[in-house]
Length: 321
Image 1 (tube, rainbow, N blue to C red):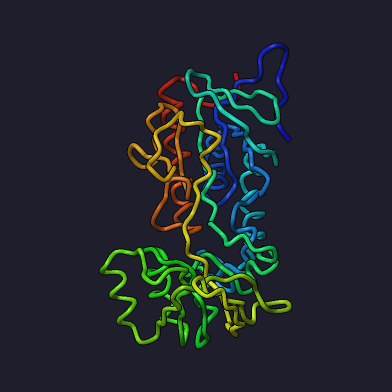
Image 2 (spheres, rainbow, N blue to C red):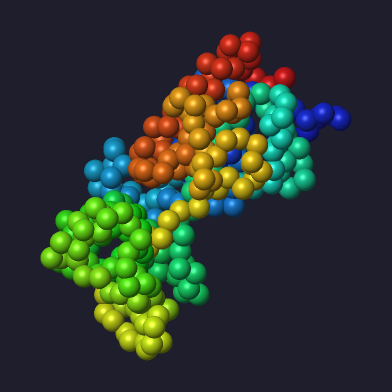
């Protein structure tokens, strides 16, 4: 597990990585191969959002697809083979005001010369009681990841912003019908995105509606919709539901110590640098556009290489001080 503090002062690690999705684990692989012996805090959901994904078919190297949790396990084993240390614990807070940086986990202090933030962004869900049960079994937050499975089927997209419009338009490549469930009588998306959707004959808006319940046994077979004006409810059969109401970047633990955009995503200086020297970020915590496992892995590689070069410039190359 973790390296314990020695004496009065904690061990100073060359590199701590916070997060364990494709970005964090790829960073761990590259950093470990560079003999940086990274300490990886994986959080309470080791492997990130791919652990709630069933089959991943678009990650290179797996022609028959691979289960999300299995992919993350393989990446973790690869990093550990080269000397990374992993702890399934959540980082409570950090102090980036001076170096070495200070990181607290369950009240215990750790220190590092460099830090990689790979904590990702959590999709917003509807918050229904049975939602977890259907994740990966008919309810998804990623059209690019799961749209292929709904070829020739009817699906819902929930939302009214640009993300929902993009998801709905993309899903028409596969689905026979896409119904956009929106709780108001107009979309809040940009005009051009609205028009593209409204002009598409395969897309039908369901105005003033929201989902109050899921239907199905092992997989989704329908949903209960409630009219936001009249309160009337009806059960509608459907093959799949895509939630597109935004993401929440997991940056709260930073307590505003690095620059974030208005939505809480890390602002980057260059490919992976932040406004705090020695702190790097990768994956969905800084990506508002792609949010794919492969792009996250790519930025994880970049962050590790950037951290290695920065540490080398500081005269810190391997091992712990």
